[in-house]
Image (cartoon, rainbow, N blue to C red; front, side, top):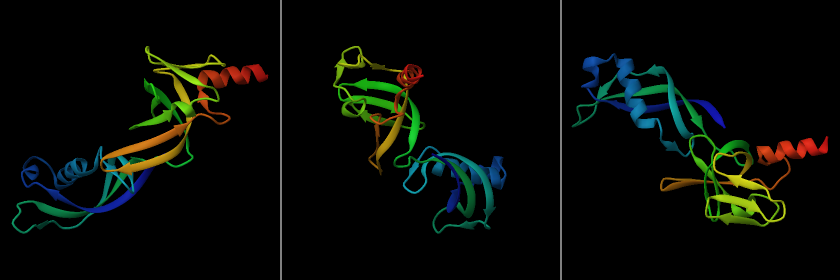
Length: 181
């Protein structure tokens, strides 16, 4: 889920940045380096610094030429929520499941969580149900539910399922709806 949050933190501005930029531009540049594209356990994925709301007077650090500012700013973040239903695009298929791009990262649907059928993997990166003959391939759009989240510095894991009513490849869902009408 996407969020706009207010954050307060100290940021170090390199004095060389102040030669070509205003203080606000230099602070925003320093915040971009410190936050953007990084994963924060509380915030999730920091996608963008939106606005600087307030800043303190700068002070020099001891044995450091940098200028430090206490800054309050707005960020756009994305954080997965347990039991959240999300749309995604299959980005890779492996013998144990499918990776789904769900925004700034990929989640994994284990082969046992793709459908209520035995699923076989083929070398041409396709997963197919034995009885249903349903096929899942790269670039398919799916609707999945987040069932597990692990955000750690060494790696983030998001586990997904499509084995519940209303979940699955969008084409399957459209076909089911058309059959029921």
